[in-house]
Length: 109
Image 1 (cartoon, rainbow, N blue to C red):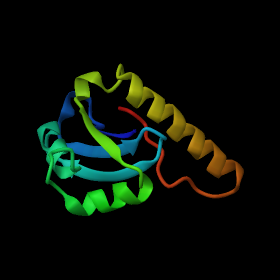
Image 2 (tube, rainbow, N blue to C red):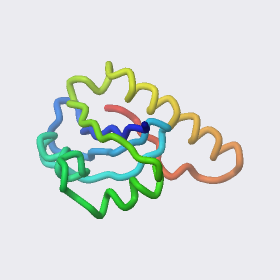
Image 3 (spheres, one colour):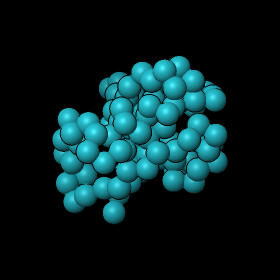
């Protein structure tokens, strides 16, 4: 089953952008959070939260998915998230080679 990783893109998990990224490298959502403790609710990791986000997630992964919150302290070492970053970069390179703009390329702080 596919996974969606949700994490703060701020070293230390402070005020800043958080992302939901599929295990295939596709960025599925983002939200400005004042602290990483809000990420699980704001991006729909907490069961029952943000049904609007799950509509997008279900469109991308119609056969189902699992949600996983990755704390800021583990962003650089989490194997699944590292692979999602790698695939995201490949998506960006492919889009550039076709002459289009990638929708989102994540740079980890």
